[in-house]
Length: 139
Image (tube, rainbow, N blue to C red; front, side):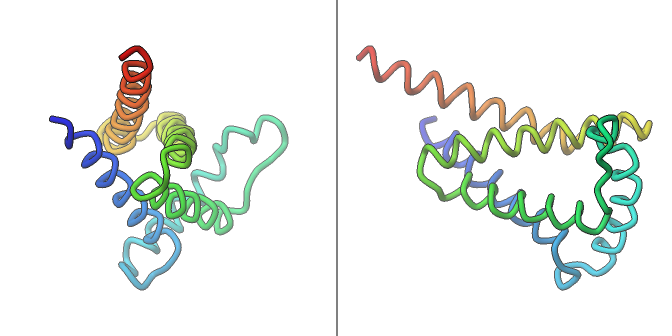
């Protein structure tokens, strides 16, 4: 059982690394890359900070999210504990933003499932990490 959480952390980190890479280049899947480019046009229209006067350019938005996922995914999977925790937090914010965006666009709930599952796993890792550290202090 002790290996379950590290395995989930590494697999989730690799998942984010891959999804970020797909956003950065058409070399992995040209069709998926083109689909993401068109989706990010819609995503930019409902960007949460739009209410404050900031609307990102869709291509740059796609690139920034891709790089965040690549770097944070790699750190979540292979980084030292502090950087794992920071990347977990960053990816949690990204997933909350993804869910918000999909709900505002009135996408079917099934479209929210991957982001919701990832968010749940990130929160589980965060809670598990805190519980594990607290326990070791009292032993």
